[in-house]
Image 1 (tube, helix red, strand yellow):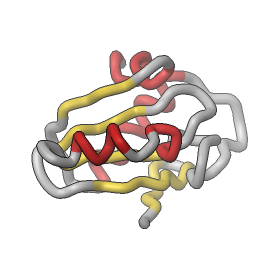
Image 2 (tube, one colour):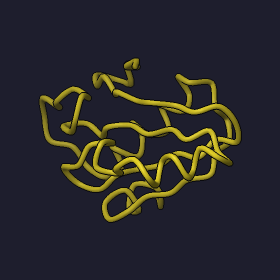
Image 3 (cartoon, helix red, strand yellow):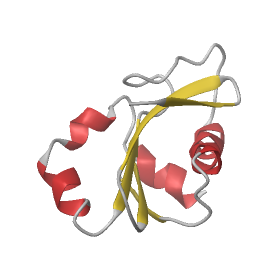
Length: 101
């Protein structure tokens, strides 16, 4: 699967087919930590967009300090790069904080 460049970070992502749903994982976890069952169930109704936050999984590592706001900018930048203007958003733990911004 692909990576997109958002600012100075390469974000690894996986994407489904229809009705965008951006799924944001918590601190230090990768998209693989969602397991198989939840994403498989979600793809029945949504274009599921799973991605690794900076410093997680297959995304690149930040070279300086960063904030939740920076990670929210990464997330919106990912949607911009994918050409998605509107999406449902689901985040857990830190992913919920990112989604809230």
